[in-house]
Length: 403
Length: 235
Image (cartoon, rainbow over all chains, first blue to last red; front, top):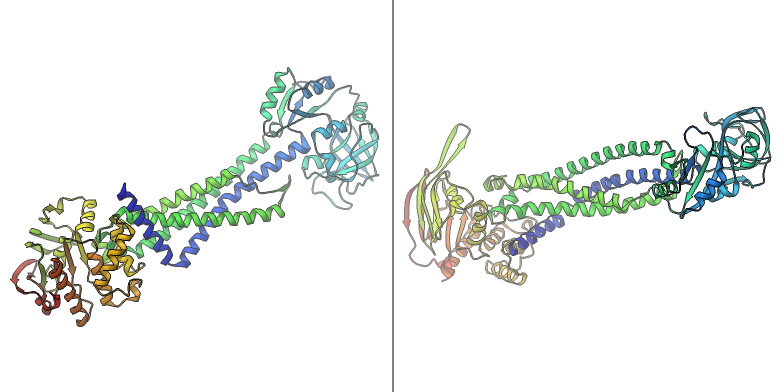
C-alpha cells in the first residue's frame, strides 16, 4: 500500500514538474483544444434540447394543451361535449379544459383570399388552457358573447404588399377590418377583426378563431366539439394523466401533445440525436488524436529521459502514470475552461436566441450532458495518453537512453 | 559482492553477429574500487550495463550480494537497481526538468522516504560533493563537472552497495575529472563504497585498487595496483 502511494506521489511529482517546466505554449494550446471539444460536446445537445423544449412549449401553450381528447373512431365530433368537459375537469391535477370546433375555411379580404383553419372556442375556457390571449399584438382576445368577431393569427393577417412565401396570408388585415369567411357547408359570414395574435407557432399563427357559439350556429352543431384540449397542473406527466382520464371511463381518444404531433417531434429528436451522435463521435476522435499526438510527441522527445528514469530504478508504471496524470490535468483544466466558454456562449444565446420556425430557441444545458461530456473526455484522454506512454515506457532501457 | 560467471553478449545487427562479451568471469569484493579498461569496442560498457542490470547477457550468470539478478523479473530488477545499485552515466543523464536537489531526491521519493528524511539526506550529499550552493539549479544552469557531481549524488543517495560508473569523466576537463576521481577515492576509502568504473584514461589507473582490462570481449589482464590509500581520497 505504501509502495502504491509512493508510486502515485512520484508520478504526480514528475507530472507536475513536466507541466510546470515544459512548454507553456503547447500546454495552453492543448487545453484550448480540449475546451473547444468540450463546448462542442455540450453545445449541440443543449440546442437540440432547447428545440425540443420550444416545440413542447409551443404545443402545450398554443396548440393542443397537454392532452387532447378527440372523437372516437368513426365520429366527426364529440357529442355531449359539456358533460365530458365537466367529467374531465373533476379529475385531480386537471387545471383547465377547452372544447374546440375545427373547420377548414376560406378567408376573403379586399379581393384577396386564403384558405386556412378556423377554430371555434369558448374564450374563457381557452384562457384556462392555452396562452394565445397573452400574445395579442393588436386588439383584444374574444369574449364568450362575441358572435360577429374574429381574431386572426399574424401570419394569416399578413403585411400589406408582402407575400408570406406560400403560407396563407391576407396581406395586411388590421384590427377593425372586416373579413369574410366561407365555411365548408357553403355558408359565409363577415366578421370584424377584434384582434391579431402572434405566438411564433407556425400552425397557430396561420389560423383564426371565432366563438364556439358562433361556429356551432353556422355549422348547425349542438353541444359538440371537434376536440377538447386539456391542461394539466404539471408538464411532463402527460402519460399518467392520460391513464387517469381513461380510468374515468372516457370513451373518446385521448392523446398526449407528443402523440398529437403525429411523431413529428420524435422524428425530429431522432434526427437531431443522429446528428448529435456523429458530432460527439467526431469531437471525441479529435480529442483522442490531439491527446495522442501531444503525449506521443512528448514521450518520443523524452524517450531518453524515460530510459534514465527506468535505469535509476523508477518503475515503468510510475512513468506511465505520470503521463496519464498530465493528461488528467490537461483534461480537467480543459473541461473547466470549456464550462466557462460554454457559459459565455449560453449567456449570449439566451440574450440573442436562435430563431427557429417554432419560435426562439434557448440553449438548454442539462447537468447530465455536462457530466457525460466530462466523463467521455476523461475516458478518451486517459486512453489516448496511456497508449503512447506505455509504448515508450516498455522499451528496452538502453534503446530508450540511446534515443 | 559481485560474481559474474562466463558472461557472453551477442548483438545481432542484420545478418551480422557481434560478440561484445565472449566469456567474462569476474569477482568484485565489497569495498573494492575496480577499474574496467580497454580499447573502444572491447566490451567495457556492455559488461557494466549487465552488472548494472540495464542489459541481459546472452549467457552466463551474475550474482550480486548472493542474489541471482538474472533470474529476477523486470519489476524486481527495477527495485534492485533502486535499492542496491547506483549508476553514473558518461553524459550525466540528469532529468532536465528537475533541479539538482530534485534529481537527487527523486529515487528517495520512490522508496517512500519522508520529506524531512529525503531533503536532509539529499542536501547533505549535495554538500558533500561540493554543490551546497547549486541545489536549486537545473541541468542547463550547471557546468559539466557540476552535472556529473549531481549524477554521483543521485547514485549515492540511497546508500547503494555498489556504485557503477560508465566513463564518468569522458566529457570533463582534466581538472574536473581529477576532482570527480578524488571524490570516488574518498567515498571508497571513507565509506568503504564498492565502485566499478569504466575508463580508458591511463592516468585514472592510480585511483583503482584493481584494473580489469578487456580485449575483444575477454579479460586480457587483471592487475592489482593500489595498495595504499590514494592521496586524493583524503584518508
